[in-house]
Image (tube, rainbow, N blue to C red; front, side, top):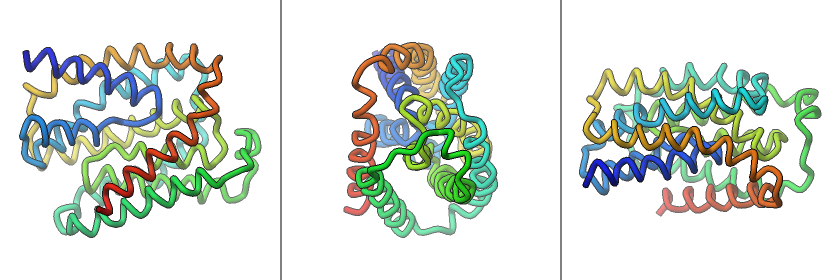
Length: 249
């Protein structure tokens, strides 16, 4: 029965995170520690390994749809990957409370910024912005810290940054998944080296998440034709504020 529910949970999480541009590692981490009682080190490694296959499947399907903006994605990766490596190596020296406080503040500020941003720039305008390289690099750096230090996916910062840079709706989602693939591969390597993976929990979660990754891009094509897209940005902004506030409490 546990395997069944892990698969169902993986399916639901895999569909939602691929649909809305998250990696899901933080959600898997919370479930593995609070529900299944894994210790933090094992849960961190297991969550990243679990999220990776579904991210690859999701990115591939979004790529086939032509939704990924690789230019902006690569700008984020230039800073994200080195920071993931550094963060993974120094994570044991960073007090958890200080890190949690910083991440909480960052998420709240990003959420507020998204809600207050009135003028939405088009993707073509973004490419011409002088500050786009710097902004993309900054968001990549912050997300890299989340992956490297805590074993989270970093998807919250990436998707927020892409919306603030002007990408629209599911193009932001697709580009976020693209960035998260490479960040998660790097983070998983270092976290597996320092911990162990609970494959009994990981495999059913992974199977469900992969199925969800096939569903999500097709569902995105359907939803893109509806009015739901206009609610994506404010909804994600509010979620960021809630997540950040929870980290601060």
